[in-house]
Image (cartoon, rainbow, N blue to C red):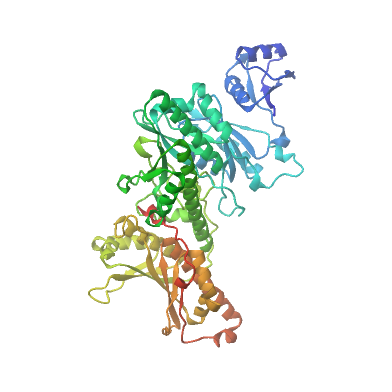
Length: 623
């Protein structure tokens, strides 16, 4: 497809030959004729790269017959819709920062980097609506970042003139950096951009890039990927991080090509017999890659003929949450192992994001990004530095949505607030059981920590007296609305992890008790235990309604919930939802429901249901 350029602010004395000579002198050969009008002209270029080069070389920089030329894309008003191009992006600007800027103007459907010969970066951005694209042009044109000023243009949106435009969920191609939904957006599934991050020996970086960048361009073209080599960071480092954005298939193929290049270079220089593959992965995902007793890793090793090791937990810090997965074997074996490793990591990440989205939907008005339940302050720190002085790695941030890449994994400002309304205005009481030895840490010196926690969460938090001298657990009584419960319980889970009351490899699981009207207990259990089984399948929590439980003076019984933080929270919300539904029915049909009350409850224990794998690694974010 031709890229038509508009040449404006031309002197009446300018001829078509003048323009042809000018473009020729600047080594910007035209693809066709010059269409000259009064004061302006149009020219064609065969591809976007040449068009960008012409714009960057000429616009506002070249004088012809006494007037400074203006050069930009020629886009008719009809085609000025949702697509824009941003140029002159600093080469060292982190993608999460750019994503944050874009998200301020609206819902970004996808962002695609354009491979150019310029030192600065160029991206094509598609917004959800025409108005959002217009806002982005107005707000971001000329946006200053250090010594760089963004240059923004409309680019043709061919879908506007298409009689049967494809659904938005299908827009963009495999090279696009797929964007997820902003809060409250469409629920159609989109592929989450989960990049592969690898470490390569510094001496091989030149070979991977190739002469004039030809090798890396060939990789990106063949695999429809974007490959970022962070070569300018920490010049003395022995290894450089490489980030690959593409479909799973494209990512694996790009990785294979890089491995082949490194192995060929090693063979020619006789530097090493075998070059290992080193994959960087957030610690919050590594547990599920390893599997129980290392079964997942052993299976991958056996099937691919590789040897896999993972860096120590001692190498981690709040600023470096990534671990290095080293794979040793032939190029073919390492490439096959990468496919299986990334499959596990991607699955773990997608499960985490699904759980967070469920949690957000369960508490109306809950703004997860504003909760700040990261006890160590991760939610307000800049992106953590990568290993060995590498550029900052995207933090594992399950509270962010996907409005910008990994937005995921990206900073909290990406996460827009939910519409605020109150579906559960009443105060809730939750009894949370913590290890006895952790009581001091929760209370803090002279009660400072528990007071601070209560103020932060907007809840009443009390620790009940010990029932005996040798009890292993103490009960924390938390009173407050749903959002306060989420904050308070989240901070307590985080504090236990932070203070090492649980093994670093162990999931923080606590028991919580909530009280429900005895008339509701049967609904929580469901016919034949159906409801409670479905509850476990949804939340991964263990839910128990004890046998022969006598209701208290308020006609309430206890439901026990055991699980990690998000499992427990989701179970609590779902049970409260059932209670609310029953209350509404009682108000509508008071006599019919009241007659169904029973003083004795039946047992329903979720251990009888098919076991499901728990999303281990959630609590790594509390580190």
